[in-house]
View 1 (cartoon, helix red, strand yellow):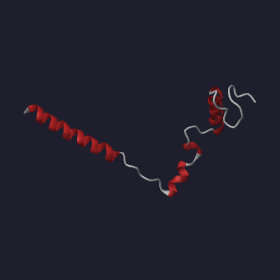
View 2 (cartoon, helix red, strand yellow; view 1 turned 135 degrees about the vertical axis):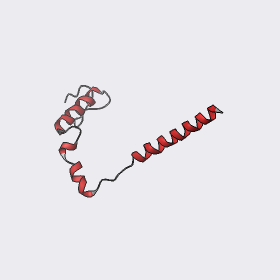
View 3 (tube, one colour; view 1 turned 30 degrees about the horizontal axis):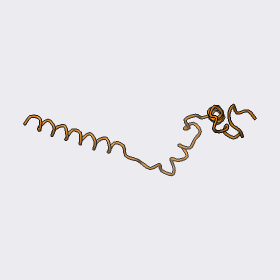
View 4 (cartoon, one colour; view 1 turned 45 degrees about the vertical axis):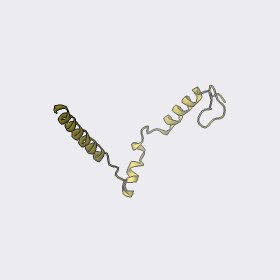
Length: 79
């Protein structure tokens, strides 16, 4: 008898936590007047586009199957 009461309590607690979790994770669409703020350069993960380019170039140059980003060839990335 005690195990069925405990399992019922656990089910209620589990269901309540699921409902709370899913209700807290709602998706709010971005309003048109807020998009300009989110598109600013300071909102990017890496603000410097040159740093992104060099990181991608180094990554893809180390991969033998593809060339660097924006250059032909593969392997070491030499032109």
